[in-house]
Length: 312
Image 1 (spheres, rainbow, N blue to C red):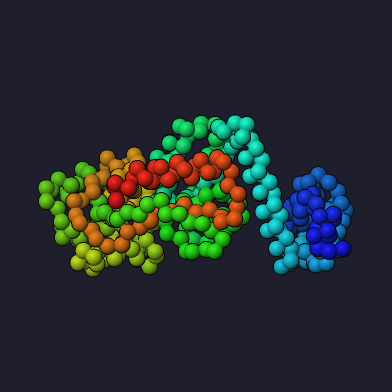
Image 2 (image 1 turned 90 degrees about the horizontal axis):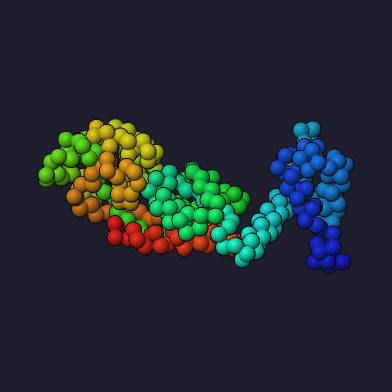
């Protein structure tokens, strides 16, 4: 029997479902309880898959079971198979009613408080029946892993490392701007230069991270050494709140300073700030079928991004 016959005749979706549940719980007994079938039935299913494929999928120990390298590969196959089926069912549902479905979006803190709100308003206005699940993701490997594990459909972030299995689309790029509180003493000055604020209380991202490295280049491009911040943080709500209080000054991407509920509390200084620009990107798995609802969200994101080009 060749490989394709062995897979087609003996490896069933039920088997993959059992394997995924055992991997998730780390125990055949716990998987059986979750699936509401007997422990022997789970053990038999795993043994039959191993016999069919001729490889060991789990190492057994006193604490339970642990995936082998072969098991890790088959688990990813199972995740992909069930995800593609789910996307197909969503597409069928969408053919009957385009105003249905779900979109799961992960986004970083700075995107969540600038670009995401106008996109969500536009999308929800056009497709009120589509459920949006928007979650905050931590920058770095964690958000990449959530995409790979199909826990989110799209990732909205700033610049990401190139990954062979991802498609990354730049929605727009923009400069940084210097910002003070709208009701601060500094904001009342008619002619304000960077010299006037360079010795202020700066709230900035740490210089040893990617955002901070860009910010330091902005200072250098304006002829100043990067100042020592009084507060170091990448939390955008904290940054905006401190600047709006009038006691701190900072640097923000243009969209963050001009979008959202906090814009009235900030004043963007009329300074030329040549230097590096920062991009807003939307990322998804390259070979994954996207549901019609996700495609519609992508289109809305592109439309909103086009309307924001003038701010940069």
